Image 1 (tube, one colour):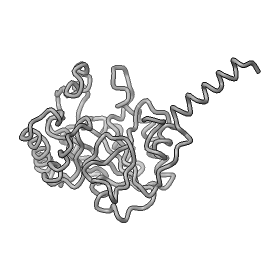
Image 2 (cartoon, rainbow, N blue to C red; image 1 turned 60 degrees about the horizontal axis):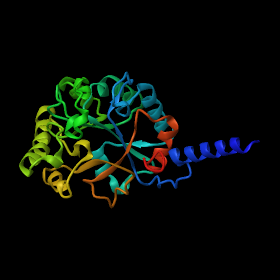
Image 3 (cartoon, helix red, strand yellow; image 1 turned 120 degrees about the vertical axis):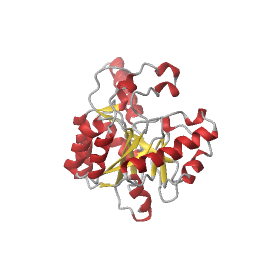
Image 4 (cartoon, rainbow, N blue to C red; image 1 turned 30 degrees about the vertical axis):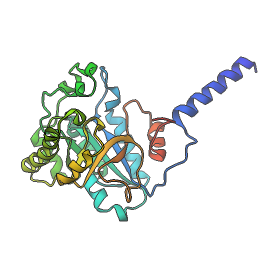
Length: 272
């Protein structure tokens, strides 16, 4: 075997070791996994491929969790039972409130008896929020994605598998808001969800995962029991701040190996 072939093989091994970090130390399965999804649909072009997990892949993931003894919780249930969670506990979360959560995700969740939390933007229809994080993301791609209707949300709630949490009134960038507007986004979204759907809204998610140091106190004072971020990882939920919980990003760019590694360590590779 030539030196060039040996070097090529070594480079390939190094690349996949870095990309998938299969050698990483697993996080104990006593700590629950909080999985972050957005859309369950095929990617047909555009920028946000990572936000779209195909229905086929989503079902494969849920089926794996069920067949390997994972226990499903909503976010509010996870908090209530945090001191007595069984090994291999998992909470599925969906951000924003896309219609495909009802069309594609709900039937799969029903099929396997899996629970989930949907973080709803109250004023979600025909609203462009991508540029609130980066000005270059102002194409309107996510604005054109169909969002959940109130009737669909009510049917999801009636399934007894879905918890409705808040993702603020308008999915604004909380870091850029003054205290009054920020508090309004957090508190009024909870009130409107509870009024519209006759439920307790206990769970919150920061838009874009962005927040200032003490914003979690506003969430607590608004009456939520928990909040999730987009910080990547797996928390010991017994001791972690329940208003700054990490999640595992499930990307439409992931293959199934990446999903399994993320369940194991919280990350696919060395950095993400």
